Length: 338
Image: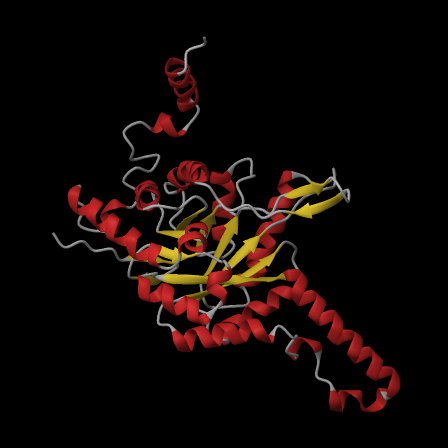
């Protein structure tokens, strides 16, 4: 039986649902070519950070002011207005341009930020460099007691509106799981202009160096159990939004890809497994996925998608609180007290 692996994400027609997530591998054009040859359907480039853009603009502004003090009357002839100035993140735009020349798969740029501001204008430069879409990676840590949940959510929505208002290419928003009511919040993001949502962002969590007594960043690669949270929320959100949904975190094997599609994901995004085992992993995943679909008589990915969403699965309570008691009971039965 011929199996159709194609899917649609952010309005882009993809040959299959396996996408390279933002990681060091996607920041190298030769690596992108190997991933494409292995079967990857698209790639998200490493992030360009709000802090990078603002730092570059501050450096240029300082140069501008220094020259103004030296020859104020003639400054306008030598230095352009800040909004039109190339802010120095040329390497990132160059990566987009090189990637678009060297590979045929869609290239999704990544912007990482938290607060509304001038940095969001950079989305237009990314579009002009040739990116097929933008993944807006939002990460804000509220530390003030006066910040309410509503004000935090509004800040996210405002950033989405600013970025989508500057471009015509589709924008996906990558968020974390720490929201009180995702079925209410996610539609607010899509109403603000997002064409899709990526679940979930794996935030960099701080550690403490006991020798220096300093806060130290510590990047930990994903584990398979992280997918369970993603499965629950995609299954629930699939019935509330028509926007694209991407599953990321914990996608390591073909089984993980299949599960994500069944609950309603349009694509799955990989990073950890590629960093550990290389580009050939993509080919293996696709082969095993196709074999499973043939065995279970699925003709296409489209047929699979969402067939086990909250509304469509045989036991919706399994995605809710009822599953909690069942899990505890089954564990107790399997591991009786001694």
